[in-house]
Length: 217
Image (cartoon, rainbow, N blue to C red; front, side, top):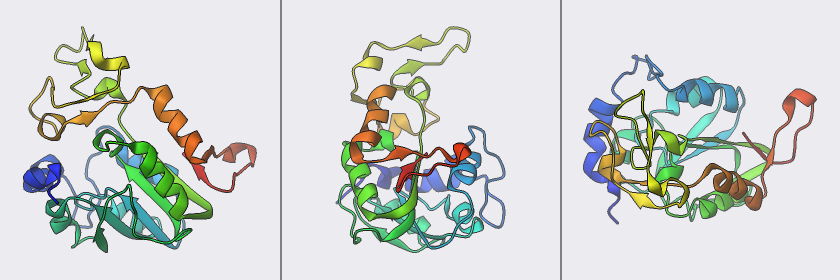
């Protein structure tokens, strides 16, 4: 099974995400991915599954919060780098090789634009997440994906015709990112949010002192 990221795994590791300290934590966080993971996952304990872990770049942060990270990915090339950072398994997020309620927390970081059917992934995340557990989704809004919005000129950002239709493309306004190399699936935000509800998740209202049995943030 060949995955799209196999061909760019070394570039991804050594160039695209090379800015890490000696303890594995990011030195810079330009779009707030690490900050979001730290805030939404929070401190905890037990096994934490990362679906689509890539090169394992988030493992150090997850471990620093007290969790025991485990990662899955379909790309053998990416896992070649990840295996030095966390326990791994080569698996598809649409068919996780774990029993029901196996994990205290599950995370999916920057992967929904890579997945043909994120609905299935969310269903699997729900299945393996223990009652009272937490699912953290972190993703880029379509307005930042090159195939759907042209940001060549920050003063005149152009929304492409396919923005509301939902499709896959490798078109991009820049050749310095990931999407021109592996492509991206576009889901309008309301459609994406509805997938969480359909999978069974409910928004955690922690500030009001309310927590649903299994929640996403």
